[in-house]
Structure formats: C-alpha cells, structure tokens
Image 1 (cartoon, rainbow, N blue to C red):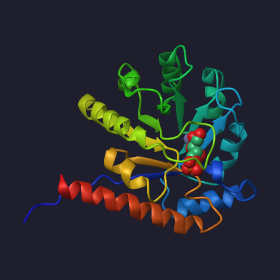
Image 2 (cartoon, protein in one colour; image 1 turned 180 degrees about the vertical axis):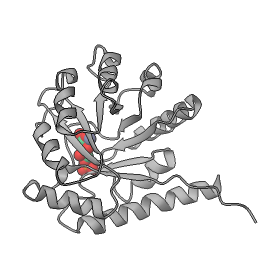
Image 3 (tube, rainbow, N blue to C red; image 1 turned 60 degrees about the vertical axis):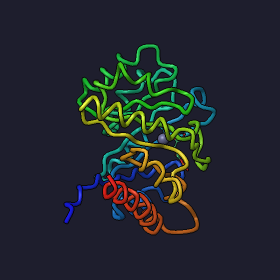
Image 4 (cartoon, rainbow, N blue to C red; image 1 turned 45 degrees about the horizontal axis):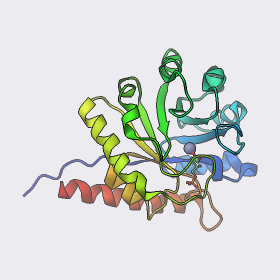
Length: 236
Ligand code: DX5
Ligand code: ZN
C-alpha cells in the first residue's frame, strides 16, 4: 500500500474589506471560530489605488477582539511613513507592494527591524522575476489575482502561471515563505490557486456576504481548497 504524502494545509485569510463594518467585531469573531488563520486588512489611500479604506485605528480596534494574526495589506504610496503606525496599532504582518517603491529593501528592513512578518505583493501585470532579489528577506509573497483597489472583482486566470512560478522560486530557495493569493477567490477559483501552489487564500466577498453566514461560507471555501490539496498530494 502506498504511504499517503502529508498534504499542506491551506490557510484562509478573510479580508474585512467586504465585511459589514457596523458589525465588524462580531464578523471577525465568527471568522475566528470558523477556523480563519489570520485576518487580512486592506489599506488604501486613494493614490496608489483609486479607493479609500481604513487606517491603523481599525487594526487597533480589531486587536482587542481577536487573537488571530492581523495581516495588513498596504496599498498606499510611501508605505515607510506608516510602518510604525500599523505595527504600533497591533499588526503582526505587513504586506507592501513592489510597484511604486523606490527602495523596497529599505521598507522590508524597517519591518524586520521590528521583528514582524513582512511580505511583498505583486500586481497582475508584474512578473514574478522582480521577487528574485528580495525573496531571501521576506516571509510571504502576495500574488494579486485581481488589480488592487476593490473587492468583488473577477479572478484573473492569467495570473496562475505566475503563482506556479513563485512557488518554484520558493522551493528552489529552500526558505520558508508562503504563497498567498488575493482577489476573486471563491469555491470555484480556490482550487485553481491551490493547484498552482498557493498556500494562503485571501477572500473577502466569498466569506462576508449576504447570502450565507461567515461560518457556512468559510466551510465551503475550506472544503473546496482542501479537496484540491488532497488530490494534488495523492497524485504527486
Ligand atoms: C483588493 C484587496 C483584496 C480584496 C479581495 O484590492 O486587496 O484583499 O478585499 O476581495 P474579494 O475576495 O471580494 O475579491
Ligand atoms: Zn488585500
């Protein structure tokens, strides 16, 4: 009988951008009870992306209601100016974009100096190759599977080869680094991302919506992601 290879557990990172802000604490608590691995907080400044969202106060408020790691995705110009503010508010990880950053290495070092997790996000039009020089300095890669700025967008399938490429680069580097995907993730697209090598799925509208509870939505997403992962391990 063949020994079954252990399968990587896919992690879920609910994005509160789609949550009901009037009930934010309750929704995050429900996501935690339903097995969320971390909470994803989208920060937008109206310049880096054409939308505004939230700042460090939201991180601070959530820090009081959940024990989950708070992962902050900075879609802002000059992220260096806000690193301390988000970490002081209680963020456990900061994701910064490669695009528009003149000295990414300095930004990464600033986060690491505070002993927090750091990741680099790349937009759909940005090739994986830009990560080569920074891969040894980071804990996560965030592959954007939509153009950043808004929730409820369609998953861009053309980003899947890049997810595969990032996974290969990480395996070759032999360093622990997570591959996270963000945008348009739902029970239909999650299996595609997992099969391509994603180990963390960010999901906003597929988890926080009016058609089902957060718990039911998370179960459906977990089931879709884990079934793919098992199939992949069994066939590999
Ligand atoms: C988009 C954000 C995403 C967004 C995902 O700019 O970075 O995290 O919340 O939302 P859905 O899952 O609805 O695409
Ligand atoms: Zn995000």
